[in-house]
Image (cartoon, rainbow, N blue to C red; front, side, top):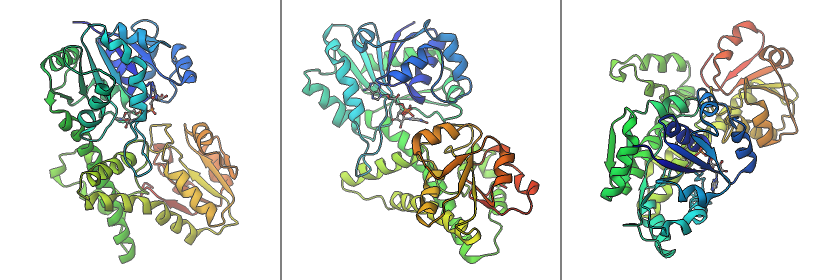
Length: 418
Ligand SMILES: NC(=O)c1ccc[n+]([C@@H]2O[C@H](COP(=O)([O-])OP(=O)(O)OC[C@H]3O[C@@H](n4cnc5c(N)ncnc54)[C@H](O)[C@@H]3O)[C@@H](O)[C@H]2O)c1
């Protein structure tokens, strides 16, 4: 069965979701409030770097995937409405749901027309959001799920840098949905994807996503805590120690082991905000999760820990070369980038001479952070030649072995990569 699907919010998750359904021959309408972004998409250009997704966009734009400025028309024609808008951190770390509510307002009036649709929250939202916040919000607008529409959640597990592959070869599809019609329609929509489909309660669907992201954050903070212990004890080869840990056959060669490795803390759009949101959600229900509290505290301490290492080796009048600006290799996403945090701390400590190089993220970083003290280099060679010391913050493969090429320059390796 082929469906019509509307996707609200055309970021990493929304574009990937839209194109994955287009690839399976469903008709997809995409809507975003950011008109600069929609103009780029209409012209077949991705607003960020993402291998495979770029070609899928060219294949489907203005064909199976239509960008629309009219949210109501898109929903009128659709069987499914996927909400993929951002859910950033609120003031107390809670998930800010305002983008979800504002997206719903854009199409709510259409839901009275007698056609049964499934509204699917794909954005990451803490457990009980669909049941205690979204459904009551709809009811206040005179819209009760049932004959008119179903409400479900469908957490997304893709990794930035591998969005297309992860979407086309998902290892599991989780749908929190509690009515038969909604479940049947979602099963049918996903039947073309070769992945096990799990139908769970609304709260469980949301919870599974946080199980995943808080575990990843915990593994990273555990590793960083262990690296700090190794540092105070001294004479411990931290990188080798973790690599030998990974040889334990119980990992089964799993890529999960890569999260059990020290660095300068987790960043990017998801792990920081999702760990905070799970902590805040649990506190609001009366239980303070101590492990998550420590995971967050350790993570927040890591930029200072690394800035201190720099300060031990380099003096403020010297020129510091920052290697890597994106939050991880393979991506030009600079949201919650460790490089920005470390630069800010060094600026506060009186360092003034910075140059930076990232294979793909110089422009995005400049656009987001506007450090007037920072100059950008176009090549690895030029940054190495111009710097008195180098700080490696993103473990791009291009940087492997660079310390051997410049044996006289100090390298502060925040990722235990060299
Ligand atoms: N990025 C990831 O790796 C990833 C992975 C899994 C889940 N998620 C979750 O998916 C959600 C989206 O993440 P993302 O990285 O794609 O975000 P993003 O910031 O890249 O994209 C969000 C988009 O929503 C748009 N938007 C905001 N309000 C809107 C509205 N009212 N109507 C239509 N569009 C609107 C924004 O303009 C933006 O283009 C978040 O909840 C995130 O936690 C992200």
